[in-house]
Image (cartoon, rainbow, N blue to C red; front, side, top):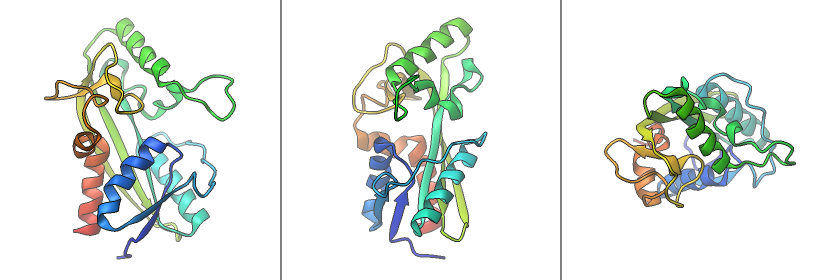
Length: 202
């Protein structure tokens, strides 16, 4: 099994890059982001989290010549039939903004509004698919999730994305209200990472 000492984090999302870096640095793994290398973001054309994670990781590994780690994640709301799901970031896309601007305040309001129309449960989950890809095209995929519910109005300013409206089962605070270290320990990304770390570093 190839030893991992330096990994490209195949993301331009600085929130994700920070989380992944925080998880890997204690293991002595140096991380560099796709944005740092000016790698283009491939279009996410797959229909699953795992498919999109694989697509992004493979592109970054081939372009950089280094192992690459990609995360594709999103919020699946039961009342919305699993939406926004793999389109979580697209729900935040700002029309006609050069560079693909995103407004998650708008996206959270859209989730709330659609839920009000649909009725049904407030249950939801964050899902994460993590893909490790190598320059030769080899890949490994690890999937994780965290169950919870949608709350309204949004609370907290410590997270990113949909964190202010997501409260994990057993918690009294949203993901945007708890300390980042606590979130890292219980998040969907942490669940996927635990599986990745067990396979790669145990």
